[in-house]
Length: 255
View 1 (cartoon, helix red, strand yellow):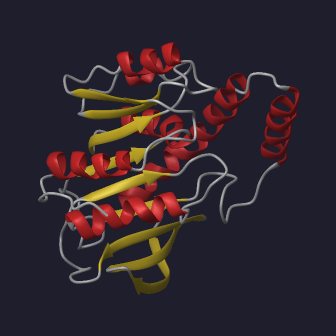
View 2 (cartoon, rainbow, N blue to C red; view 1 turned 90 degrees about the vertical axis):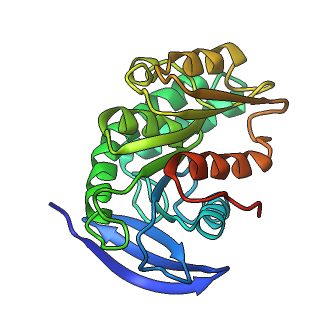
């Protein structure tokens, strides 16, 4: 059993930001500045490939959830990302991705393979992190928990959510179904799914196949025109409203 150790604290934008470690995995926990110790739902967020726990997308979504809903939000660095060292395997896969990109070859097979490897490492880490977070009095073991992850956050999040019944609602999107469809079929919680209709990397048929694979009775598809990196910012507002509705903590405000 790994304990959570806080390693730093600061306040800004109405949030308390606390850095922590669980074992050798670094993370950040954002909480409302007014009442950081109050019991509230928790949303776990998985960052995208090549990013890190405090990437602006993570901090922006956290502000919506913390200031708009009064939630706690936690993010950890995925293996080989952020403050975690890369292995020789990481370097080989990243070099192969850049080679394919420069040659104009499909990136999907490499990304799918590499993300599946990262998920094998990350899922046990996420479960241990959730164990540790739920021992905090302001979160507790009986409160609702959500998960929000796009791209690589989906590649790690789907097997994590499929394996852990504590997650009660999730936002996913923008990934291939290859190794995820079977695990998605085990997920029955409410789902919101983001898809870019003109994605140059993930064919829309592939995105639709992954959405279709979820066994959830309540699942909503948000398909927007635009390329892979053009997911509209208003989808973050929608995700916050989704969690406000399903985790039972008021209505999120736009930010």
